[in-house]
Image 1 (tube, rainbow, N blue to C red):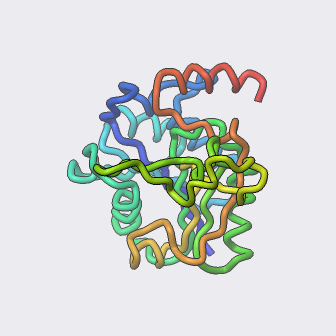
Image 2 (image 1 turned 30 degrees about the vertical axis):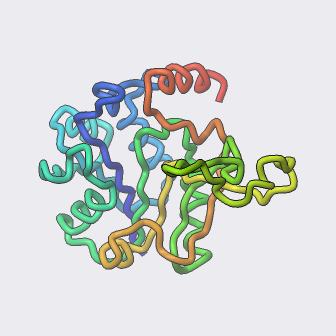
Length: 223
């Protein structure tokens, strides 16, 4: 079965200008995602979807196939799922496995990718989503209403030791594995049943601010 690595990279990041071309360990985020996908050795094709020509050139140099996305899929409200489906449809791909690898996860390893893909193939259905343990347990949170703040679950959870609460995980954005047919039909990465692939907090770093970029560059020296 064909496996496609899809790497989405918009050109107009606001939090970190030019984010996808910024470097971690001397390699741009885009090139690092492409290189890690190539080293995994499990993909039939590695595809970069972007609206920026500079990013496209970086992708070509790193060895990716480039699909230029329309402006409608490159704005602040654009969804990754729409860019991925556009790339698959543009290439005429209707079957196989699609693996979303966001360039903003520079400490995602080759083995993370390989294990997530094999986990999906072993499950044979649904999806595999990479996650990490929640830094703060969501049961110990409030949501605001006009009348008063309310606990997400039960007010008693606020005083319970974390060890007595069920383990909770959050998507870290690094890896999403789906059947191509499911993506095109459902327009969602979260296809039931959802299987979680857990990654460490370090590997789960997501570049969203200059501080994240500084931290990733510091950690990669010893990672």
